[in-house]
Length: 267
Image (cartoon, rainbow, N blue to C red; front, side, top):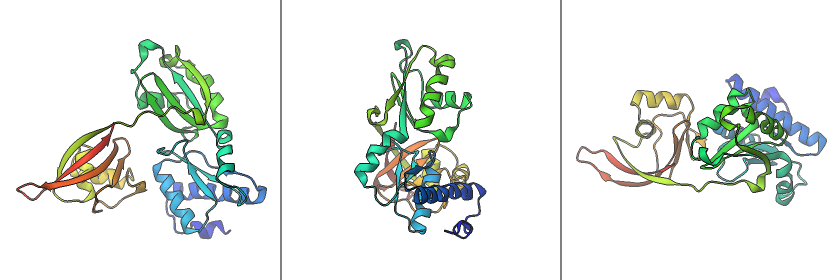
């Protein structure tokens, strides 16, 4: 495989680096006849990798984040001899859960930002950590297997977690939180994406365009950079840093011709 030829259409250095590392994993898997995997990828990188693998017609891969709804995922590359059952057996060798159980008086005190902020404060590598599943009594942090013990050892040094119980668990013991949604009604002048981002992120139209240009917006898991993109019924819109939203219904128009849209917001 000619790496330079495969990457010639990609202009961003960070994209080329991500895909170059992916090609290395593919080559290692072929030559060593074993499973290889990347670190955790964010939503933009997941879409980038998935589209690239389709482009080069490579099929022996799985995007895996520990559970079906995960936003951050790793690309697992495997030899042709592996089937789904064999891959599942290897999941626990690749991914672990670091569980933080807060002291009772601290239940409900911390958000996703607090847990992620603690990891960043410790100087630990973000790409080694997948989704952080937050519950009232604590959180489950999905990590690559060889990073779990490091995280377990270092988290208690943070004041916020000094009274917490911290353990390493198997990925199959992940405690997923119940998905909660709330109904939101927005009114948009048209079905352009920038109108939706403006309302959902509670910002100006010009700022919404900036957010889209910054590659922070995804429709059905695919990064979308066109502000004029037309939003459709049942589209899932994810705005990094703002949340995930589902377009549930177009509920008529106002006298001025604006469209009333019913949204489900994940909370």
